[in-house]
Length: 87
Image 1: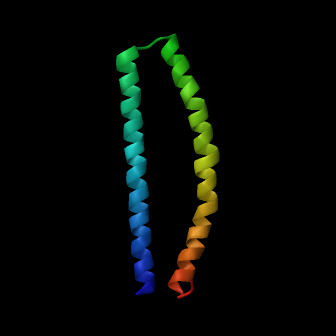
Image 2 (image 1 turned 60 degrees about the vertical axis):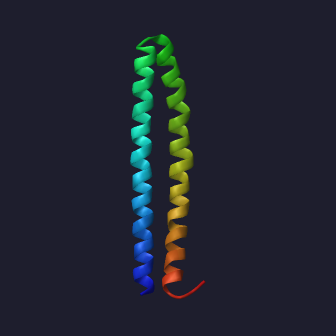
Image 3 (image 1 turned 120 degrees about the vertical axis):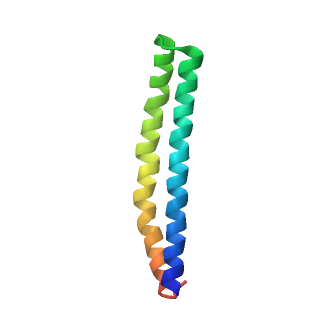
């Protein structure tokens, strides 16, 4: 039963993470479409999008992916200990 509970927890966490990622992508699309509709194509909008994309990409690459590489093994170890009955 402990491994079943850990599997359910992991499945719920995976579903929540995937759902939030899809929601973030859709909201980003809505943001981009709104900018295009409100301001149109032009040098000012292009400058804004470049100024937005560069730090957003850097944050995704360095923070989010970096944390994933650090936290996934930590969560896996914690789940394994929990499944074995440890604290």
